[in-house]
Length: 138
Image (cartoon, rainbow, N blue to C red; front, top):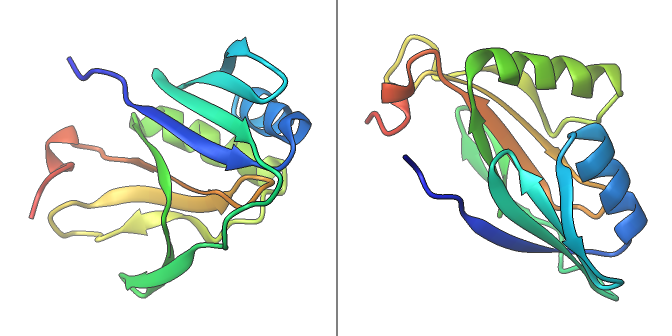
């Protein structure tokens, strides 16, 4: 069994974080204060910390002919949960950096992936594999 990771990220507005992580992504809110909120981020602990100024926007690397934002974070979902989330985000008119698609099709590591940013500019990637053994395939 994997153990949950802990990640703390900056946000410029906790109300936007509530709407995005709690509302749109459906993450359960845990402990909180006026300066931060803990989220159950698909079984992992994500903490949104209020900052007065966001760090600079992510840079990009080319991967499979797409400009992938660096840094980014996210989770690997099962295939059906990924499809459901992609549909939910599309219906909410999320502005994707990289629209939901299949990357490395027919190759080792074939995966469904999508990239988007939260309201404060933190880049997220959600991916899924038909065969989870492909997660670390080379």
